[in-house]
Each structure stands twice: as C-alpha cells, then as structure tokens.
Length: 449
Image (cartoon, one colour):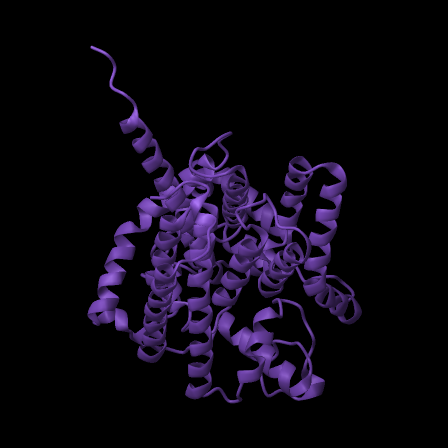
C-alpha cells in the first residue's frame, strides 16, 4: 500500500496534482450537496444554541455569554462554559433571529473547511507513510458521511478537526522527527487554536514534554518545549487572561464536570429505561446533586459501580471505547447528530454508494487504527524512516489520549469524528506494513530441496 521512505518526499508530479484537484472537487461536491440537500429539524438547539448565543452576544453587546440572545446588556453575565474559538468563527455570519441564509452561508464555509481537511489528510499520509497511503487516507476522508455531514451542523467539529490536523501537518515534514523554528511555532499555534475551539486536547501538551525530552538532546529539547509553549500561549493566553480578569479563574471546568457526569451511565441509559437513551442524565432524580463538581460525580460513580461492578467494568473497558468509535450516533443513529427530514443520503446514488463503502469499511478501519498505533512503536520499520515513525507515534499517541479522555467522560461517537483523518491514517499505515511484510516474504528465496 506504500512505497519506501525516500521517493514519497519528492515533489508532487503533474499527475498527482491533477488527481488531488479531482479528489478535492469530489469532496467539495459531496459536502456542498449535503449542505444544500439536508433539512435539519430544529438546527439551533443544545450545543448549537450555546454557540449561536455566544456569537450573537459577542457581536451585539461585546459580552461573551450564553445568555438568551436578545437580552439587554445589563442582563448578560459573562461566562467561560464553552471555549470561544467556534463562536469567533461564527461571528461575521450571525443574524438575529437566525435565518436560512445564515445557516447556508455557515454550512458552505464549513464545507470548505472539510475540503481543506481532505487535502491536509492526503498530505500527511503521503509524508508519514507514502503516496498510496496518502491517496487512501484522503479518499476515505472525502467520502466519510460523518465528515461530509459535519458541515451541516452548527457545531465545532469541522473547525476543531481542521486545526488538529493542521498542527500535525506543520509538526512533521517526514524529513526530521519534529519541525523546528517558525514551522514548529505554527504547529503549536494550530494546537492552541484547536484548544481554543474545544478543551479535548488540554492535557496533550503534558504528554509531549517527556517525548521531546527523550527524543532530543537536552538544550535543544528545552528550546523545542519553549517554542511549543509560546505557540500554544499565543492563542490560549488572551482567553486565560480574560477569564482571570472577568471571572477570577483561568477556566470554567463546568463542561469537564458535565462530560464526566454524562459518561457514568452504562449504555447511555438511566436504569435501563429505553426513553432515556442518549440523555440518561435528564432522567436521573439525583442529577442536581451529582453535577455539582468532579468530586460529586466520582462519589456517585463509586456508589453505583459498587452495586454492580461487573456492568460498570464492562462499560468502562469495552462499552465506552466501542461507543466512541461507533458508526451510529447514539441518539439519532447513522451519521446524523441531529434529526433531519431530508438528506442526499436518503436517495441520491453517489451518496448511497459512498455511504455503503464507508460503512462496510468502518469497523475494520477502527480495528486497524489500533493496530497501526501499536506498530508505530516498532524499533525499526523497512517501510518508513525514523523521522516518519516519530510522526506516526505522535499520531498514535494522540488517538490513545483521545480514547482515554472519552473513556473517562462521555463517549458519544460524534466526539471521534474530528479524529477520523488520524484514525484512517493509522489504519492505512497498518495495511501498508502488512503489504510490505507480504512482499518481503514472497521475495525470500525458496529453501533448497
């Protein structure tokens, strides 16, 4: 599935450039078709309503608050429940009351982000493994119904996914274990931008510290860590400063508490009540007490797990990882986060065909992604150079980190969608390693008779 560690670093040929343009055009066609052809029932509710109100209040009143849009200035209380990156992205397009045109413009802009992400995924696969892997990863991202549909929701997934992938593209060029200078600063700034959109990656920099110290000589390692810290702080610093001045704290951990709380219900059910599927916390009479802090959530978890340890152990060790990377979104099903009354995936042949291919490949790819994340830690690989292997290890570490975060919290499958490019990369890398092993095996001379 790939070539060796040298030829893929050459420039892009004319044939490749034409192929990439065609791939991006196809990705754009799918995403624009989804935006134009999908009718979402109540598109601005839940998380989307929060983002809308943040952007509206910031634009109209200069206050970052999720209070009801239209409230007077004196009635707006600043908060930090959600990070501001996505609200800032929405800011130029917000209208009150919301209109169909507003949603269409935002959807088309998010479709463009999705197309850019396909190109970045192609480039990262090409750099870290080889040309064929780049095409496979780019193609899988292009047809993924979850990534296609991410353009239609007023949710932060496409922006978060783009910044996360951009950080990896800037960090690893396939020639050295980690980029240096302005490129490294750009990678750190992109990571900071991703953190400004969603807090999922907040603790990832702590994992990078020992990796850098182990991989580089000490003086250079400290310089690398300083550049990483500066790049992240450039994006996150103003947010921390604002919170400290207005709220007296660096961040609001309320969302983290909610995420931890929403994940304590096995199979997303409260006491196996079917009507509670996906939102068990709304049926829990102890919700107000449990959701007060991390400590109260942990206390409730310990008490309930003590009453049925086998079920909770199975939920945390098996159920949660499988739920996180599942195909179906638990509340709506299939590749939809919110309910829709129409979609190209309901009848258009190309959409149906790509949906079928993606769905058939989904679980094999998820399993192979785990295999690839482990194979990246081999001492030597004839398929990739040491520099490429270092990049693959960081991608694998990122995926394991995301898995750990959501096993601790709420493992809704929508939370894995922004990391589909990285999952596809590691899955395709595993296939490439298997292909290289088979070629080496076939090339061995037959034993003498």
